[in-house]
View 1 (cartoon, helix red, strand yellow):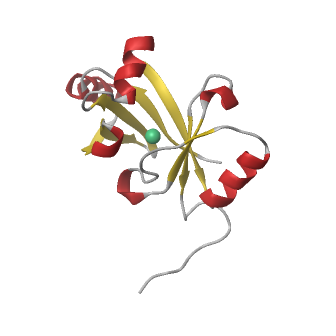
View 2 (cartoon, protein in one colour; view 1 turned 90 degrees about the vertical axis):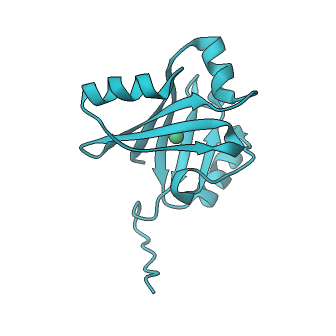
View 3 (cartoon, helix red, strand yellow; view 1 turned 135 degrees about the horizontal axis):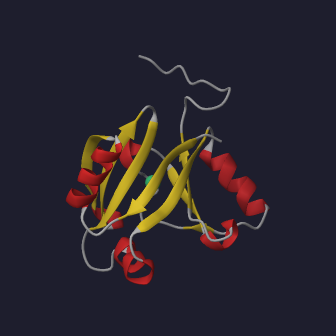
Length: 141
Ligand code: ZN
């Protein structure tokens, strides 16, 4: 499983983007995911990516995180080739998954979150990535 990105909870995306640009990252885009009440800045450097997460609206899980723990690493995201199969494997192993209002992340990618209780304190995001693994879907039309 390849690391896709690291998610970092921040109070201000604008301030955090400036810091990460100084570290050496380039800003790709800033988007708001209304359903998850989060504003996300995607930055990249040499194939490594970070997502800066700012609360967007009342009851945002990022707001709760910031109140409890302050700014910092919020989650790690790993690529899987078949998300549905992975979820079945995890359920069979009694791993706890977090259900989201939307299972679609940035760029319409399929995502799932594993509860920190099942990963020793780390929130793990899984993203389906077709370029990962041996099965290639050649659906060019
Ligand atoms: Zn993420």
